[in-house]
Length: 94
Image 1 (cartoon, one colour):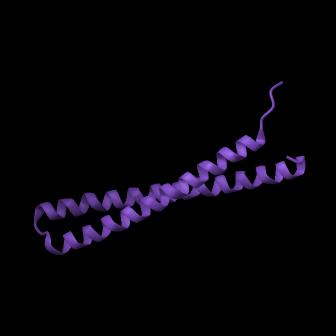
Image 2 (cartoon, rainbow, N blue to C red):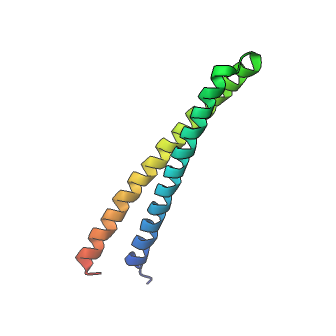
Image 3 (tube, rainbow, N blue to C red):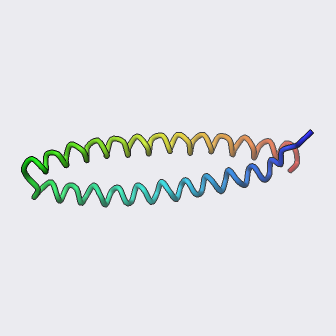
């Protein structure tokens, strides 16, 4: 019978959680910059091409926000699993 090393599993989940946090922070920062640039462009860009760009940018923005929401849910799930494993390891004296 194979046993799971919960300490290694916990370390892996904690490392993944840290990586996910960095990823989200970078994406949020870059997205804010892009939104600011898009707003600046909107103030001077007119015509059919501008309307087309705004339409697609709006779709992109919605999809990106959905990605962030789902990624934050994954992050919350990881927090729960990490806490469970910490508690398990404490109970087991690991």
